[in-house]
Length: 201
Image 1 (cartoon, rainbow, N blue to C red):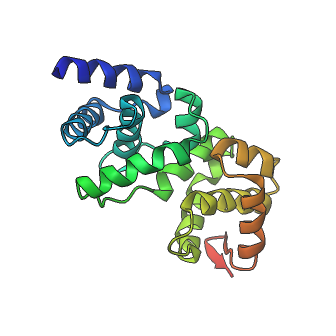
Image 2 (tube, rainbow, N blue to C red):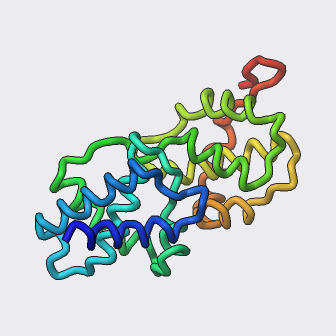
């Protein structure tokens, strides 16, 4: 039975891109969570495969492993239409069943990922981290942190006049165009920048 879990986890983890591929320790945690969830009957009346994907997502996103994986990644990799909607019930049950309360979003890990993917100039990296430091306080509880990530990327690119468009950011992050435009309007007067080592408010 344990071999079955190992094989399923290895197949799922191996399908992810190299950048998102879980470490051996993360794979072991996925395997353990999947086995416990199966034993607890969480898959009853549901698909075992979707439960496995939820275990992959939840384990990768926790603060122990900090793999910057998104719902879009899950959908693209495993061919899940509307991945957030499909995975959410499993995620809620897993967190409730096993009292999982670890943070599921590390802004710095995700920002670093998309900083590289969107080809921001490397000489701006240190400044970008300071930029996140001074702006993360505008994030409101209950709001989607990925939407804030997208708006941080957008304003940083605009500030430096980089050819990085809203469409490029939404394609990369999975945040919708409508959502990004809304967050831009809501936060455009709150964003601060770093100029010559000083904060420009």
